[in-house]
Image 1: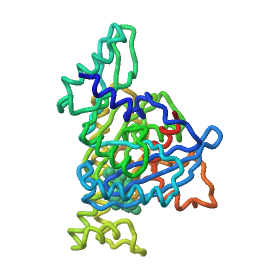
Image 2: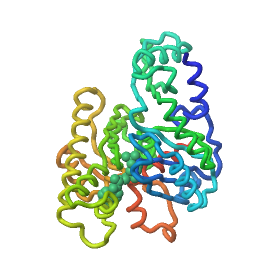
Image 3: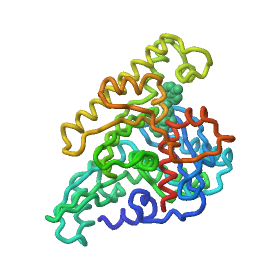
Image 4: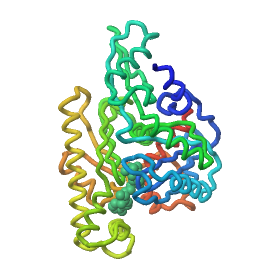
Length: 367
Ligand SMILES: Nc1ncnc2c1ncn2[C@@H]1O[C@H](COP(=O)(O)OP(=O)(O)OP(=O)(O)O)[C@@H](O)[C@H]1O
Ligand SMILES: [Mg+2]
């Protein structure tokens, strides 16, 4: 039974599993299809590192992607096409990612005397565990470690075939080639590892807060040891502003992100503060659970990404409620750029939203 999904993995799911070369080349492209916007980034090889070539972001309306599933494929295709034209994308081979409840990530420990049997054991175990019929999913795995007693730690990734297909069709219909499909958690990890010095003694929590999801991955010694995806995000805050100020959703969103110029009204600041407190609480809940259930290294610090991480007080509130140093992630620690094209202010403004797309582009470029 595992044979059928594996064919698909080789085609699409190799960002994580490194089965397929992305074709090298001079540039690397990341495409992130989020609930509120689509981001497209192209990096150019610069010595041993990477340089920012193009970044494009285009908003999509609330009803285009619902519960992380594409509801309006035409709108997604049109938006990607617009972005491709806008940034004059050279390389059509992209790395993209999935997230949400159609995606299952599970660490498994198996007793595998003979590594040749690993795959069938992983898939057999997965069949017992997965909440979906195995014929409906695409699965793959990565070996994390293997002990002398044959205990083998494996990270399983499974995604609903229908959801994967809908993302692939949109990307292909917009004229791009989906060479690699990754997972948002691993894109964050990839971005972190490229931009921050490795310290094998500490674990770090990477948090992306977008429009509809708060994703946490704890990384230790190059391994994503804990992941959690909760369906809360900036859209909840916008909905509160809409309700309290009796505005349209679009006006509430504009007011929230300071798009009207001038100071944000007190009521909006208060609701942003409440939203930030909720996000901090959710991060604390997840990290408390991680601390209670894991024997791995304790988390040393927290890095925040995603558009909602731009709520001004968020880092401070997270730091206060969890008691760990917290900062916005900086994707441009190691990615160079031409300052005459990209100003510091622009990079600071896009940084949180660009984290996952850059992590994806780096994955594309790594092969
Ligand atoms: N300055 C700001 N202050 C507060 N919130 C902001 C600001 N800028 C953007 N946001 C919020 O960030 C969210 C968009 O972030 P992002 O682009 O990371 O999400 P997404 O990838 O579209 O969504 P998801 O990751 O949930 O699929 C929106 O809810 C938006 O209102
Ligand atoms: Mg996102």
